Image 1 (cartoon, rainbow, N blue to C red):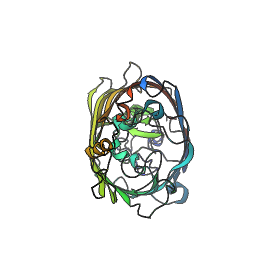
Image 2: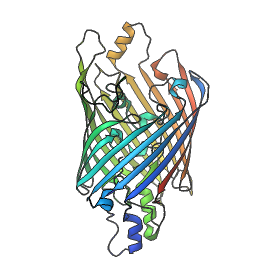
Image 3: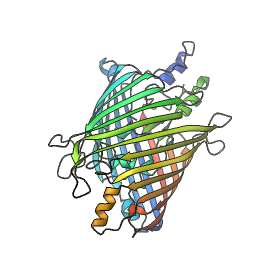
Image 4: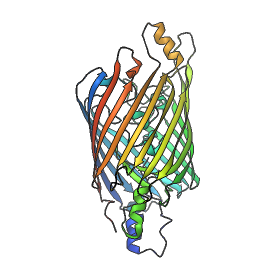
Length: 439
């Protein structure tokens, strides 16, 4: 989710609350904030795939947040600049999978990831954002699935692999504009317009025009906060700090958590249901040789729900699911189905730990299969991934996450055996000034 530096108030904090506590929770935000996030992965393909070689890769994030209200007196306006660096080898090259065993795998380079300005036209109700922007920061997000390492749990593959080089999303982003409306706290609507051809060979990803077209994204949904948690009206909570007095610190921890990977804050919700879709304005070459070029479009439905809350209110079991479809004629994948179970506070005395079990199923479209079979290229229908993960929070700053993935039909290539992959991720997130200091 895009980080907003203005517009959040905590309804649970009344005028009678101590001023020191109110400042610790709602902010009196700094004009400038810096964040540094670093994630490192190591994977061992223990069985199947293409290679048994150990793979190591990392992701460094440098973020600058400017509150223009504080700095220049420009009300309800903020700026974000996000630079990334990736190093290491490719997990996909060892496993041969399509969906992405590691969601931080990216080209080895420094890049400008995001650079946008956001203005709250009506605070907590209507905002507009423009600049270099990751569409997946707000579109197609399942909060409960945010701690899995496989890319499909973070961005449906029928959407992320669409178009020519994919949408404006990690790791390659481009220009975009987004309008967000929240007529009432529980309902929201998103509309985005972004570059229709981000990763095209021999062209800058910031180049526009020359028939590239645009990608139109839209989503509408319902969210219900965790029981007893402070409602999130403008996400994410970039003005919210962790407090300790009045039980507010526990409420905030239940309201959101850090997503490992790219320094995002993920809201924890009791219930979320969303319907979204996307469409490119240009036409694409069809897989069938005798067919005319066609439009690329798709729809998805996602949701999650808290099934059980621990009696002490520090954890619980949530379930999530997502189904997405794409135009068969021009897209490789025409169906994705995924889901899973996540337990927050899985071990006694460790309320911030997360245990998760998920399944991700991606299916080739009929037109794509006919084209490959006509070329005598053997291809399986689908790839399925089972993932088991455990995220251990070590103090305020560090995360350690052992991970296990079973990839069936990697890359839909019948010549590649099912792969068993052991993984380990370490992550650290630093902020200046820190939001972690209590009241």
